[in-house]
Length: 250
Ligand SMILES: [Zn+2]
Image (tube, rainbow, N blue to C red; front, side, top):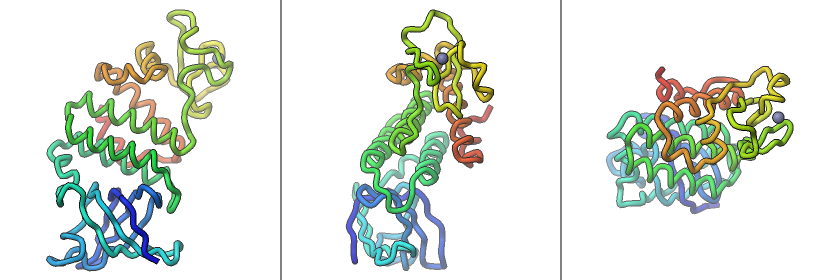
């Protein structure tokens, strides 16, 4: 059976001299891996080799979901350009590769997440436009939080996870922590029960409690938040994501 979908390439490896194995994040189907036979031949059904972040309409056969699907058509959106502009800036490219790695790790084959697809597409479009380091960090953090939300792991960031005291109602200058095991913020009264807690600066906690502040935050605050998120992803995955070291170089 042939299935049509709209998809973004989130990983690609060579399979042979002429073929590739491509992992797509597809809007209706979710994540799929497919063999693109002959994609590296000069004249193929796919306008040349498929690159990471290629985006467009795909047709694939998925008669047996246990096996690799076969890609039969791929028509690039935007003519044949896709998101080629991302590779002009190394930090931007690394942020996009990091997002693709997390998307790959936190979604399952044939498990559709159309909202997450739209968020990822928007993230790539925004990344293509703005490429200052602070802008990219802000985009990355917001995408990572929407990823966690869409896969059912949304952290609690507006109240203490343990005692439910709202962050906005706290006494000024109270200490605030993030705990990966609790999946959210922990207040000073509760912190003793969460040995994995990380102390947050007041500015970083403000940003997490009100995500609108992230876009205007300073680089050091964004780095602090990203460090907490990398720690959190590491705990969730049981290993550090590969691309993390290219984002947090300190
Ligand atoms: Zn508490």
